[in-house]
Image 1: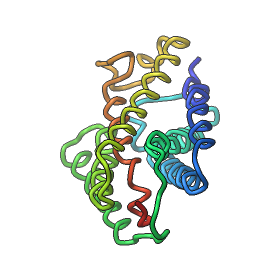
Image 2: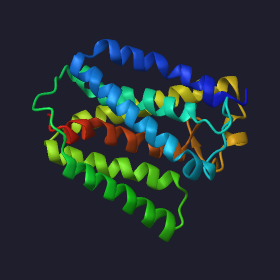
Image 3: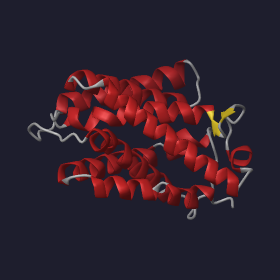
Length: 215
């Protein structure tokens, strides 16, 4: 049961497959690129960020394949949600906005420096606030629709609640045994995971379009 992080990912997989099958070619590329990007970031931050937040058991110690899969599966679903629900298709020239990428990197560095080094907050907070800020910048840049963001956030929360409740039904001690910040839960989901789900939903809605100059 202690390997809940590994088998818990299986409950995210059906949502990702469904979103992928419902998407057109451009949206499938969006899902793959977004998933790979977030998966890589999850591995990069695995040691420093997650060490003081929670302690999951990995199938292979020192190889964070679960972190990559979490990022790939979860961040792969969300970017396609509003396209699927509103039957929207991306338009514009597929051209990388390098200046915007630099801005996003600066946001990442500044947020972690201020919240972790200066304010001494747990790493889960800058990890959540960073995609929130990036998502707002992306929304403004592409002149996006607020309804799309709300749909993506709602989907992110729904999947998070469902997966956590399934995991806790099978392994009731998952939170108490593995989370450092587990004092408060809502619907069996740690409050910090609510924050992360909301911020990730905002960050995933329009960031791809903003980076590649699409609408």
